[in-house]
Length: 384
Image (cartoon, rainbow, N blue to C red; front, side, top):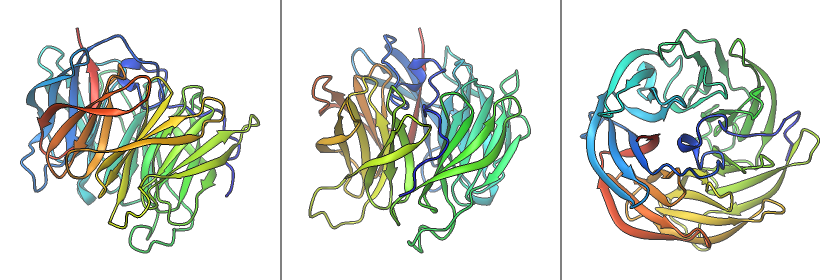
């Protein structure tokens, strides 16, 4: 396996308010307990009308008041801006795909469309911000390219500053790895690099990023075992370790920094129990805000797998796997306090809540369930 070359320490959006990104990059938990939770989903062939919102109380775990926040087509990934004023959505509609900007009304939670631009590729499936919050980064799955958009002073998206096609040798799975398939994108801690998990190429690609101009230039790549299918990535709080979920292989691969601007693979762990032979597509991965635990979801096995993290070497030990109480948990979200995990069962139209034991990392269903059309992404906005 090749090492990542010339990588400074990796982190995900830690310059943004912790309440918005706890879990995604191992951020410390917040004391804020009241949130609006926005839900991304598919409107095609479902009853969904667009982006939904509900109120979430992290003190009690109560999910309530589901309403349509903004009508839009197939908002598969939604993301609240660090300033809390805007929300951005990836409208995953094949060749007609767009990326949209919305203004947020904090009193009602309602969204007002500011503008929508072509995705410049097919099926955007992941969005992130650079560390300054001045650029929005988008990964287009079907076309295998990534795009950078400037965020204007009024929250609208400006014309793209970068359009980069992922290049490399496709993996051996002829059905899923016919070409490049960008599935996740984020910037480095120092905002000098952009990292892209490409499922089709069995690589995490590295691009140089100019934070002043928003441009990209190809730089390096990390290779995985054939047919791993890297999908999403999580990071340790100290930025020394990155954890890559392999959708096709149902594995989590651990990379460690060697202190010389390189990363090396130190472990690959299974996400499925021994003897399981059914269909499975691994989906989401998140670090707990405490930095002690890592969670990942299985679609097919329909479970959340919990791992304990060794504080000395970053390696993983499985704690348990827990049924999500529904079908196809494409995404799950750890609330910004680190108290609850919300599993989004796409094919059974439910968000099922679990309490996280802060000592053991184990998950216990609370009985709290919210019915939402085709839930596949949650983004939190702290409110008074």
